[in-house]
Image (cartoon, rainbow, N blue to C red; front, side, top):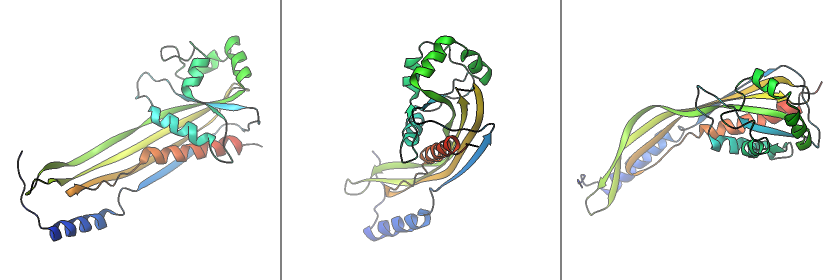
Length: 230
C-alpha cells in the first residue's frame, strides 16, 4: 500500500476547518410542490387510504424506502390518515395487483374497479382512496474522488473531494374509490448537492433529497384529502 506525505497536526486541522466552513451551508435541499385538483375530497373516520407503487413498463420503480417513508409519515400526527401499505394491499387483493397484472394507467384502473370482488373487498376494508406513487431518486453529475492510504506512522488517511447532485422527483395520483374517479394529483421535487471533502478524515455533507420529498409529499397528501371539501 502506498504511503502519503507527512502532514503536521496544525495543517490538518486548518484544512479541515477551512473546508468545513466553506461547505457548512452546502448539502442543503430545495423542494418544490405542484397540485392539480379535479374534484372535491374528504374522508370519514372509518375510512382509510391505500398508498401504492404505480406499475410501470418503461420507468424505474419507486424505491421501497420511499413508499415506507410516505406511508408512515401520512399516518403520523394529529392530521394523520389511516393507511394500508403497498404490500398489505397487494396481499389483500391477490392476484389483481401483482406486478404482472396491476393496472398501469387510469383507464385500466377504472375497468378493474368494476370487478365485483374487488369492489366488495374495497368496501370491506373501508378504502376510500387509492394513492398511486410514481418517481425515483437519482444521483447525477458526480465529480471527483476520495482516496485512502496509510500516512506516516501507519495512520489511515483519506484525501480528495467528491461531489454529486441528487434529484428526487415523485408524483401521486389520487383515485376516489367511492366515485370511481381521479380527484387530482400532487407532486414533490427535491434537489440538492452533496459533498465529501477528505483531509485525513472524510466529512460528508449529504443532501437528503428523498427524505425531504417524502415529508413534502406526505404533508401535501394529507392536506389535499382532508382540506378539499366544498
